[in-house]
Image 1 (cartoon, rainbow, N blue to C red):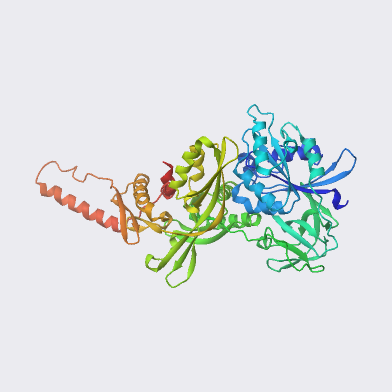
Image 2 (image 1 turned 90 degrees about the vertical axis):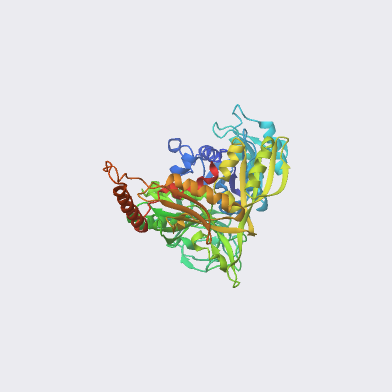
Length: 600
């Protein structure tokens, strides 16, 4: 089959706009899967993906389709994750395609992730086919959504396909558009080999398996591949295509999408966006667009039972095999013992990893407050990265602190603009501009500190707008900030798990709020437990968990007062001794108190 009969495309959409359901209908219509094997969200392999209704791991699949003119075509559908945390993976999947189906919910209309992914598709010069899904809903606003799509991509109204993926409406029109509008890949089989990695999978027996789109040349078994990012070489034992399962092929030619088996044991060698070439037909330069994925949010993961430390390490190593963006390193906390400092792409990524560890490996975990990475310039001119308050140098050594800022895009009905602006100002946001997508729907742009939005910004945005607003953001730059490390001391001992890095204007209010919150959560002891918030050596707030009282004079029925005083003095000495050697157990709810500060 020639490249003129191949179409490589993806589906881009906001979360819950019906992307996985449309993929199901395409598989059904092309008879890639028998009816008895069909199930909802067939490309979503994890229970977590089905429950949350989101795609976490992208899944490519090849479909064979016979058109009305009896000509046969090969469709390579490269599924993409839909959440902002996985934006780079989406960009690499788009780079592997020539076209994209832009799917928009007929009831919800254009949302932030739709706009963001559309811009990515335009940057990659993809042919965009606009599709309005769920047109059979009673709440569908088809004409209004058509107007939003025309405004977004500048298409004509007759180019927009109205469909219902659930009921199979408009599927034939989508196939016709894929064949007639999306260009076929160029045949560069005679050029030196270049293939782009857009994803990977780990198999216990076959090792790490890169998913590739071949742009130039031909890749065959027995070829020796090498990576541009690190120049490592491997011998290929098998190549093939994805038809739900891996199907072996004789070769992968220019324009094909498939996989390679080369006994790659180290998943860190397979970097999304990297270019593969062969020793036999080496290319001189890589495909453009590669960058290393860097985590944006950091948190400590500790086993509730210290005996589970080795089990947690093994679990993280196994997850790392299928998720190269997960970073972890051992760390020790005085309050929590031995655990791991983990780096995540965002809060959703962190939630998913935590839930998978608890579900798949039956672990009970204690998670510390999420942090972002700061750049700290020391007085000696050195610049260091700080991803946890425990690593923050002493105040006297610091020249300046740079914090990460994001460029945020919020799409909302116009009546909620005032509430959103108030929320962004509270989070130290800088207003950029407002665009009106339609008479009723606005797009707000803000610069926001990442550290301010990783806790509860998304929840507050949803509650302020009754669930109608959508958020998308990407890292912009590191900006100079007036930041301080707020330490919490419990019974005069600093608790590293409760330390936070905060803006100096918020330090006092956060210190007071945290002390009063911890007073409620820390159980009473037989001695007074002081809780203090300090900036450096200066204590800015204090509260005390009062001691449990034992009435030692209950047995005294009168007599001289000195008898009672003697017992009280003895009790006082005992409490003083107990306080000097006593340890305060800090429950998990207290460690999460930082997260609850702004939610009340």
